[in-house]
Image 1 (cartoon, rainbow, N blue to C red):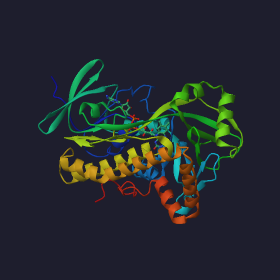
Image 2: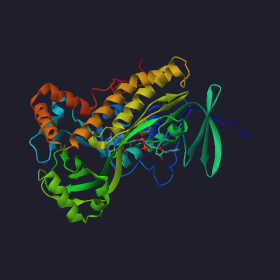
Image 3: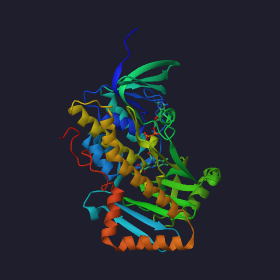
Length: 411
Ligand SMILES: Cc1cc2nc3c(=O)[nH]c(=O)nc-3n(C[C@H](O)[C@H](O)[C@H](O)COP(=O)(O)OP(=O)(O)OC[C@H]3O[C@@H](n4cnc5c(N)ncnc54)[C@H](O)[C@@H]3O)c2cc1C
């Protein structure tokens, strides 16, 4: 019998967050494996490398640039120069501009599919072991190591590791297995996405419009298309998905208005039920939980993956620090240092996102008036506006080395 392989780090879940962590650590001497339930080496992709469109904020652009990944992502990325926020049928609006922050863009729009393919390409040229399709089954502590049982090809095998990173998404089996409590709010809303062809040029403006049915976002794409993220009440999803193209487009037009001229075409539509969830504990002995497994957000402010990528930046930094100090990468000290760095960011973004959903999905008249004054005041007050612009660009979060464009190994 060959010896069981011993890894420094096993990442459960090769979605956008797990694969980004592996990519961040690819140049280290650490022995790392990704366990991914979906096929990896065929044309089929992990389920999250799908048609959804991700608005990467400027901070994520910086992190990917520091990791040497941006050049792969850039050809398919469309810059967001401005963001226009409005409330359907009311007076309030705010206009955010990258020029106020003296940065080239507040963010970039790219498909999850392209991001995933770029990460796969980077990992293919690295020493990271990709074990897929394979499912995490069980975990047991054994001295200074964890025994991880996985199933692949209908067989189970045990791997050993010093640190297990759970990046296995909103229904995290690792989290469930450890009995870590997860608090979730079901908003009763579903996001419908699809690409819309416009009559007028979008001029790299992203639109966020709060409508009676829920928030609606149009994000600029190449070839004068926009990515639509339209939130509807979950009990209306089937009805809206079943609308023929013309009826769907005119209903969308009614909600959005004519700022971009006529909506000409809509591509394939997909739907995603929405919820907010957050965990009570971020670590257990030699285990850390990141990405959607730790926090699943409503896409209203496009923050879910951006926050997950900052989890990656903070975690890879503390791992490198402990490696340089000759410490154990799975020690309590390493993991607590990650929690101290990243938990405030996670709490802040989760609270802001939840507040936005509650405030902008509510038609209680005093609240409607207050939020419209809020939008106008934000537009009129440069310091407040700059604060919001920095938040949207992700520049007010923790200052990990990757976010400051420094290499991971910098002292
Ligand atoms: C409509 C929509 C629009 C969005 N727009 C934005 C946006 O504009 N900006 C933004 O920042 N975010 C956005 N998000 C959020 C973003 O998509 C997620 O935050 C991100 O994809 C989460 O990645 P993840 O890797 O943590 O989890 P996941 O993508 O869920 O990946 C988890 C991986 O783990 C694997 N897995 C699961 N169980 C096991 C197991 N037992 N064993 C092994 N592997 C397992 C799965 O196969 C999967 O590959 C949006 C989300 C939606 C739904």
